[in-house]
Amino acid sequence: MHQTFDAALEMNLLHANQKGADHNRAHFDEWGITCINLMSSPGAGKTQLLETTLNGLQSLNIAVIEGDMTTELDANRLRQYGVPVIAINTGRSCHLDSKMVAGGIHQLQHEQDPASLDLVVVENVGNLVCPAEFEVGEHAKVALLSVTEGEDKPLKYPVMFREADCLLITKTDLAPYLDVDLEEIEANVRQINPNVMIFRVSAKTGDGLAGWFEWVQQTVANQPNRLQLTV
Ligand SMILES: Nc1nc2c(ncn2[C@@H]2O[C@H](COP(=O)(O)OP(=O)(O)OP(=O)(O)O)[C@@H](O)[C@H]2O)c(=O)[nH]1
Ligand SMILES: [Mg+2]
Ligand SMILES: [Zn+2]
Ligand SMILES: [Zn+2]
Image (cartoon, rainbow, N blue to C red):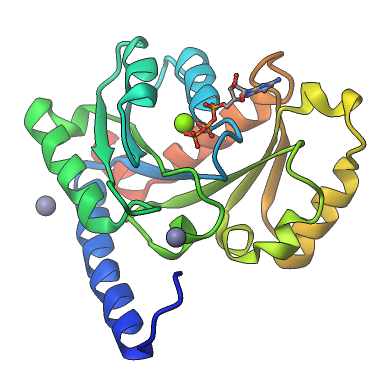
């Protein structure tokens, strides 16, 4: 959260955002859809992970809400996979908020029957701090940390790691070329969030992706209204 001169203002902002997040989650629950919020610093590999996930999980009907400050570069990468992609430009904002995502959901709703979807993945703006403080109505938060970012990042930027339900240590194919200790990354993450699910993955080689795919499928299966709607 940016330093504000007025704590009350900050509380109001987060309160308004929470109301919007509740609105979005009500939509997802009404449609029996799961929503996952993907967050990381710029370049940790969110879009590439999404590309491999769209390829690997074709049994699921997935839509993407793609947040970027400017450009539709990531959205256009993902459109090539033939899935609905709603692009949101945040302008000067360093994170998506629930109101922006509501706009995306309503647009998605106009384009197709939302109940035909299993999963909406929100790719947040690349930023290791602010996205974690603005809930968008997701059922699960997934954080990515690439092996090039340094073992200390979970300790220095704890909010996202504390909030995450699942952490992906990405680009593990690069680890042999670096002085990086993956055990230390995991220990630092566990210090902040002892129960988080951790996967080590390489979107480039495919290493570790099976565990991630299984986690996504399980998360989708756990959407309570999905069970009611499909029986
Ligand atoms: N070696 C290697 N490179 C990767 C891997 N995943 C992503 N990259 C590279 O990392 C760079 C950034 O990947 P993106 O997927 O665009 O990262 P992002 O988190 O979506 O970036 P922003 O949306 O800008 O925050 C690209 O050059 C990718 O090719 C991986 O598993 N291994
Ligand atoms: Mg991206
Ligand atoms: Zn609505
Ligand atoms: Zn910020």
